[in-house]
Each structure stands twice: as C-alpha cells, then as structure tokens.
Image (cartoon, rainbow, N blue to C red; front, side):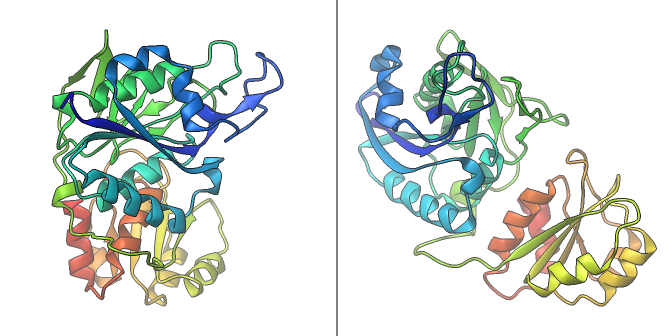
Length: 325
C-alpha cells in the first residue's frame, strides 16, 4: 500500500477558488488554482506520498453534467486499473459533489479507495477549510479500512458514503452528511475510523459499466409545490426518457398530478422533495406505472434511472434496481 501512489484528480470548485481578500467567503472565482498548487499548500501531504496528479477540469461544480460525469468515470476506471495506484482523491466543488459521488459509486469498478473532497471557503479565505479537508481525504485514501467501501466523501473531519451524503447547508463548513443515517465514520489524528459499511451494491459489484463515452438518456426532475400547473410534468416528460417526481412528504402526489402521470408513458419514479426518509411502495403504484425511489433523493434517483435506461427494462426490473442500489 505504501509503495503505491495516490492519484490526485482536480476538477475545480471552491477548494480551488480565489477571492478578493481573506474576508471574501461567498464571492470568489471557483476553479482558479490547479490541483498541484493545492497540494503544495499542504506540506503535511508529504508523509502520505508518493503522488501523481491529473487536472481533469477546473470549473465551478454547478457546471458539472452527465457528459463530464461519463468522462470522469472513464478516467477514474483507467487510473484504478493501474497496479501502481493505491487510491484516488478527487477535489470537487460542493454544489454537485453528492451527484458526482453517486455517479462514480455506480460506474467505477474498483475496490481501491476513491475519495472526494472540497471546501466551503475559497483557498484565499481566512480559516479556509480546503487544506485540512485535502489532507484528511488523503489519509482516508491511504487507509486499508477504506478499501471496498465505495466512493467516499471526506469533509470537515467526517467520512460519508456517496449514496447517502448530501449538502445540507448553504455556507456552513459542516454542511455534508445526512439526517437519516449519520456519518459513516470520521478522521482523527490522521486515522480513518469507520462505523458502518454500505449495504447497497456499489463500485466493483455494480452492473453499470462504462467502457466508452456515451450519451446518457435524459431524465427530468419535477419538484411538486402547492397548486402546481400539471402541464409542467407533461412538458418535462416530452423532453425526457425518464421522469423523477419529487412529491410531498412520503412522496405524496395530488390527484391532478396522478391523473397527468397516467398519461405519461416513460418510466416515472416517485420520490420526495424532502430528501430524507424512505418512499415506500403502495398498492396504487404498480397500477399507475410508478416506481418508488426508496431512500434516494430526486437528484440521485435521476442518476440511477439514467444509467438504468441505457437498456430496455420493464417497470419491475427498474423497481428492483432501486432496492439494490
């Protein structure tokens, strides 16, 4: 393990951002610093080398897209197949980190540690959180306990699983976690401590294999709100091959929404706009052609459905995938 390299992959984000002075915490330019410069700013990394680095992109993570996810997954798979690589750390913006992490969770086929990290404050800010997050991400990637744990997000001293993790606050450095199951583990004094392991299929056990650049089927998301014009559902569905509906509470759908969805023939997933808790199946779902998202948030349900729709599947087959992943 110590004789292998850690591959550092930079994609941009706040961790690579610069602002006009140390007090600029919310106005800054994401993706201004390269991954090599980020590493040089953390001398303590030397004890966890050797390293190699790739600058995949240098963007604000709001610019992430399925096209970039596919290319990133192909790169990570290529790197992970190398015998001289013992782990991979990806620096990423926080706005879409949970989506990129789950996409990689389903499409990267390795048991080696794949760790994502970022920051809530730019590199030029007073008390910037990027350096310690980067150090702890590398410490996790060097941990034997991180093998076969799927894609991990390491932020603010905590370790989270890609499937459950979410950004829970707009600016707090303690934003990443999940309100339902808690953190997977933590990093303290350079040691990664794990307290639970993912039970759903991921990485090396996943059936979603990307061997070349592909254009994923478009899947739209509609979050419900009181008194919504149901024509929005029809409009989004007309441009999609699958539809995620973020319902109220336990994925509750008003009758007008149900009536509209009955006319829509593409695969439809009933999720919840809340983002925490399980949306479980009821007696009317099968009759109305609805699939339930289990505990996946709408944005993660979209990712699973996009990958699933690369081949023709029945409603029952799609429903099973949401219980496996």
